[in-house]
Image 1 (cartoon, one colour):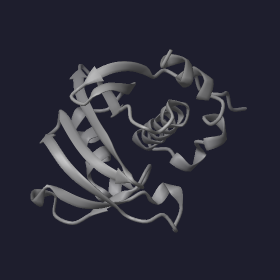
Image 2 (image 1 turned 180 degrees about the vertical axis):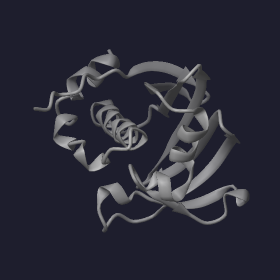
Image 3 (image 1 turned 30 degrees about the vertical axis):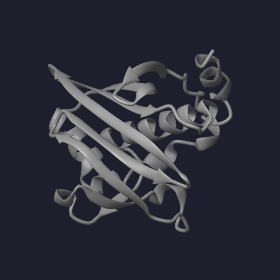
Image 4 (image 1 turned 135 degrees about the horizontal axis):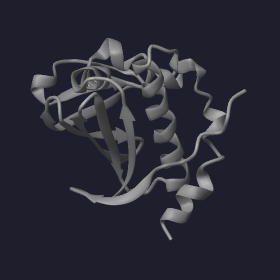
Length: 167
C-alpha cells in the first residue's frame, strides 16, 4: 500500500529573489549525493543526463525521465563548488529557470536544499514536480528504483498546497 507523500516545500529567498525550496535528508555521504546529482549516469537514474564539457560553463541536458520525445535544453552552469553548491540556468520553452542546490553533511546525514526561482510557471505545478523528482532521487540513493515513484501521487494532489504558499 502506498501513501500520498506530504508536500514539504517552502518559499524562501535566493540569488534571483523568491524561490520554492525543497529540503530532504539522506543517510548517505555528501560525496554520494553530489555524484547522484551531477554525474550523467547517476543523474539519469532519477531525472536525466547531460552531455558536453561542463568546463565550458554550458552543457546540454536531456530530461529522460519525461520520456523519449523530450527535446534537449541548454544548461548554463553559474556556480559549481563541489560537493556543496551548484547553480544553473536552463531554458524551458520561452523562459529561463534559475535552479540551485546546496548540500551539507552532519554525521551520517546529508541535507539537500533544492531551489527554483519563482517565474511565470504556476507554483501549483512547479512545486509538485520538484517534490516528485527529489523523491525519485531519494529512491536511487536508497538503492531502489525511481520508477516506483508515481507522478499521480504528486500532481494535482500537491497543487493546492503550493498555490497557497504564494498567498
